[in-house]
Length: 387
Image (cartoon, rainbow, N blue to C red):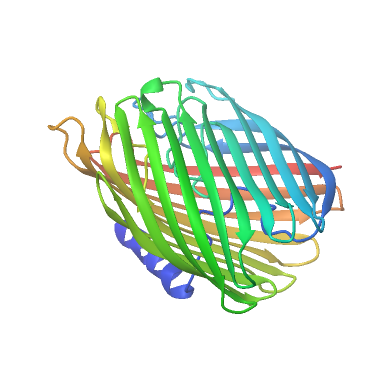
């Protein structure tokens, strides 16, 4: 399985020169057009052959029924643009043996871009998730948990245009992961400044300095990250961004991120990301925490309209994490590899009603890190109604 995973990673890297770094946590971030408030209600039936893969108990499979309700609104104006996307849901596992047979989840994202005057603007990106599974495309928490937890992130900045070519963004970020077990909680805060120099209408050079602090039950850490990058619009509907740099702190590391998104035509949309960085989540094991965790995250997704009614979605992601320097000296270094691939079909009956089906496979392998050796398969069919 290792060979399959590393081959998949090489294919993603050789196929494009850029990537969409941990896909934007909102589906509206790349949408230029306004959209009225719409609600989507969904119900689905599925089977999960490993409901709680990271628990220490025996592997449990179950059929389930799931209900969701979502809302989406996009407002685009000459001075102020904002959007909001939200979804709440519940999953009921029907088979005996599932310890937590009712799982609740909720997700909210909100973006704001406000032009204060001709030179100054305010940008805010906010995301919060409640549930057992954040998902590999949304952030730095890889594992599916046994109990629901909260993950929150916010990024707020003031942008100022000094000249026709030079601008800066100065801001702060805050993120929080709060579990039922408080010893695993993480609070992270950072301040940053980014210089942006416009080479042409299509190309911008960037230089970013960031200072971050993270607080745990077992202590705290801080680091300084410096990077340079480029943002380039390939076409009106395709763009690429890249950053490279270094992280300096209690443990140093290289840093890199490359992002790509493209609407190839009216039928095909692609999104790819790659990121290598130090992380502060999923580090607490064995009565202490690893002080140095570096992770490579790669993923890709493709939406293809087979017809005016039928859309195919395929994608996958890979995470390779290395753990070093545990606070308990007798605990050795570890590593964790996770590979996920999925495919789905959506059939639109009319503007309001659609049918969907999906399959998802996950393989996880680890050394030293506990409860991370598993395979998991999920199959689901459902119906959505938009109004």
